[in-house]
Length: 211
Ligand SMILES: [Zn+2]
Image (cartoon, rainbow, N blue to C red; front, side):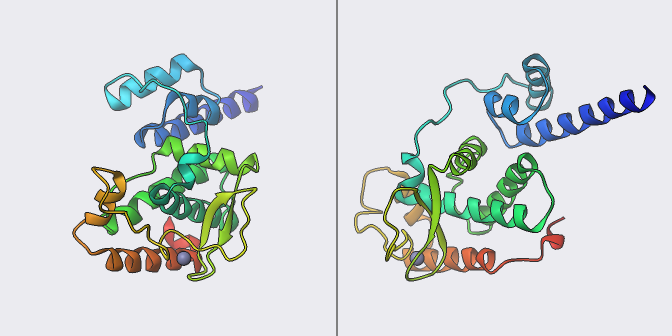
């Protein structure tokens, strides 16, 4: 009996720690409900305690389209590679790997002085789309990095959005693409630094050094 009580307290602590990690990255309530066993009421209280505000409302992204557009695709590909590396090299549970990979994604993006395009909620959704076999990755035939594509897309000779920058990117109104390209560095430099960053990840890293 004592063991059982101990177990549940420990599990409770684990769940709160996990929910806290997600809340700190601004995850939506639906994500918290899906990834932890805590009740909705407790999650809302925890959210308010940590963020001093109510959790954001609104629908979860339900379509794979967003992940396939140019700029989100680069960010999504970066995240999914980090996530896979963690799952492959550690015995981390998927729930933990998502939030840890997201923290690593933000680190990379900040180091490159780029805007955060992918939210934790979208990152979580991306993993779910992979689990449901709606999305997969394929290597770029030029830079050999792994990029997110639709499961049913033909992947032969695939060229990624970094190797094939859209010609109008940077000219379109106030699009995210424009901000992405106008960010201090010229596009070619940006491309190089992102590719270097992706390569560091694709090349594998010592998982131990991350903790
Ligand atoms: Zn490429």
